[in-house]
Structures are given as C-alpha cells and as structure tokens.
Figure 1: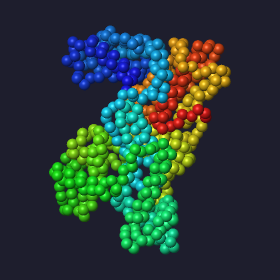
Figure 2: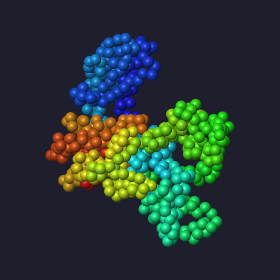
Figure 3: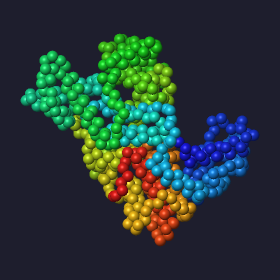
Figure 4: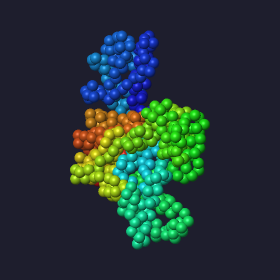
Length: 557
C-alpha cells in the first residue's frame, strides 16, 4: 500500500544515497531509514534519527551527517513546509499546507476505498481463530478471539493479502464423548429414569435443552441405536451439530462469518488424513517407537522434548491431529498460516512450528498468536466462568447486554498479548468516558452538521477551495486523516488490531477540537464549503476505519 510515511522514507533514502555515496561501504547493508511521529508538536510532524544511527559506522558528527542529508533532499512534490536539524542530530519534517490540501482531496476522491490497497499481494493467508470445542455455547474468551481474529483478517485484506478465515471444529476424542454421555444422562432423566451426569461431564442448562430437542426430533432413531449401535455417539453428534449451529448464528450476529468450518472428525480422522500424516512422518524418519508409543522428534526442532503422536493403544494424540490439520492447510495452497490461540496453548507454539519446519515449511510461515485472558467486570467484580459447571458467561449474553459494536470495540482496544478487563458498565455508558461512544459520536456529529447545512439550503459540495483550511486545528485534522494507511499497514505488519481503535480515538479527539475551535457553517460561503469538505473527509475516514473493526458508523446518537 502506498502510504505517506513510505513516500517520505523513499525521499529520505534517496537523499542518504546521494549525500553519503562515498561512504556507502561503511553503511550497514540492512540499514533503513526510520521515520517517527514527532513527540513535540513544535518540532514538526516527523522526526528522523538516521544521522544519529549512522554516526558510529561513519565515525562522523551526527549534526554534520544530518546537514548533508538535508542538503541532498529532493522534494519535487512539495511535501515539506520545512526541514530542520536539532541537536544532537535529529531531522525534523513539517508537511506543507498545500500538500495536505492535496491529500484531503485524494481522500474525498477515494471515498470508501481510502485506506484500502489497490494492489493485490499474491500471498495467501489462512487465519484460524476461536476454534472452541463444540461442547457448549461460546463464552467471552472466544468473543475476544472472534473480534481480534476477524479484525486482523479485515486489516490484512485491506493491505492487499488474499485472506480466508477458518474455524476448526474439535469434534473428535474424549471431550466429544463426555458431551454425548452428559446429553444421554439428561435424556434418561427426561424419560423418567434419573441418571447423574458424569462428574467430569457437562452440567449446564444447555445440556438439558439439547436432550429435550433430541427427544423431540430423533427419539425413534435413538431407541434403535440403543439396541444396535453406539448411542453415546448419536447423542454426541446431535449435540455437536446443535452447538455448532448455535455458534454460527451468534458469530454471524457478531459480524463474524467464516469462509470455512473444518470438522476434525469428518475431514481428518474419518477420511484417513491423520493416518496419512503419521505415515508421512514415519517415512521421513521423524518418528521413533518407545514402549509401543510413537514419538515425533520435536526436540530436534526447538521443542523442549519429544512428543507422543500415537499412543501405545494405537490412538492418535491431539498433537498428531494438529499436524495433520496443518499439513492439510498447506496443501490447500496457503503461503502463511495465522492461528490465534489461548494462553493455555503456549506450549503448542514450539512443537507445531517445529513439526511444520521438519516437513519443509519455513518457520515464519506459521504464526501462532496468543490471545490473552479476559476478565468480565460487573459492578466492579469479576464474573467467574466455567463451561462444565454451567456457570458460563456466553458471547450471546454479552451481545444481549452491550451489543455487537461495544463488544468488538472493547475487545480490540488492548494489545492481543495483554490481559483485558471488560467493564460492562463502561461499555454501556453514553458519554465521552466510553471510547466507542466518543468515536461514534464524532461520526454522528458530522452527519448532524450535514443535516444543519441542508436545513439552511446548503448542499454538501463535491469541490471547494481547500487552501482556505489554514487553522492549526484544520491542518492537524488533515494530518490525522492522512495517517490512516500507515496505521493500517503498521497494524497488519505487527498483527496488532488495537492500533486501529487507538488511531480512531486520536482522530475523534482531533475532530472534536476542530469542531470546537472552527465554526463550520458561517456567512463565509467559500470557507463553509472548505470546512464541510474537511468534515466529509473525516466522516469517510471514521467510517472506513470502524468498518475495519466490524463496527457501525451511526448517523444519529
């Protein structure tokens, strides 16, 4: 994506090559120009530390290096108002007002496409997230993973990657059987034969609901299976299908729609892909047998020890199924796999990336991102969650309480690697204390301005004299609007969706300040036109950015 920062860096790198061509051999081969936002407004818009970083290898005074670089700058597009040097060797850049006006015009022309890369990246990425066991409703931990995963996928798409989203249904193994036993116990109880749910089974009220539905829809089939087949599997399959359907519905309500739902049982075990993967590992001398069990040589690939992939009784482990699943992903033609996992899966990172590396895939092609724990706060107290005990706070209940917008925004506000306290009271608050309200109100306020203009017979213009926008609040707002593509690229490159709401809150603050200091609709027709166009630019950027998060941009509040 072509961004403002990239354009400035290209100019600076050309100046470095020109100014320091005679010392090129002394510059580290991997050296790149770093451009940062100026920390002090009086210093300008951007700060460059290149001269300081090159002082040691060039054995020269950084102030002198900075002077040479600035002298070699070729600002053919008139981007810079001024470029100054400050001790001990900073290069400070201030953007020109005319250039900013041109950038605003570009935003107005691109509209809903602004911030979205027009160039497609050939790399294909599969993002897998949530993938909760289908043993019950999704809880708020899954809600955070869903918001973060879906937003990250949108951000990656915005910078040009070919992105697909997948949900892995873990519908095989002991947990699935426990689910079946729990449902069957409730079936028997409903039939008048009180039967306790296994101690390590599932005790939530939803288990009784599943049992009631099963008796209503498939009682005859269950009766037949009780005599001739594995009736526990029938109960488990019915419960899983019902739970998965409910998960799909609540995720769709949340604005999260997957490109594919992958069943571990149907798409791996039943068609022999786990056995095929085991045979492939064995053929490539990556396994060894010990006391009847087979181990993968994961310690040779940065894991702390070797891992069992097939138990002595012949049953594959979860690890073996995971290996088979990721082999399948690569066989689908993906160049990069991104898995968003919970903190309790930290140990899987080394063993799974090691396995894929052993199979010939670059380590960096499999990224496993830990989504940290969530604490739900109600009246200042943490709400305890336990799926098996039945005391769970579901994603659906959270959406009923605060709505999809607040849930998605609050879950994305903090770094994915940080623990998150979700304050229900704050999420529902209709004031500037609520960051989502603060951002959405900026958009609604702009829509209100347009309605006021219409009431006065002023049509929203398509063009105007943007050179009239010279007030500091106007120029600062334009600068913030221009930063969106860079913020998206940074969020994508660092896999950090929280960069987007952080940017939005700064943008909303700049807009509210502009609105306070600058009268938009006045007797000055030309200035009114220019400021309405600036409002339109802000509206475009706020709406586009909220859309990246799957959050609405309301016109009334």
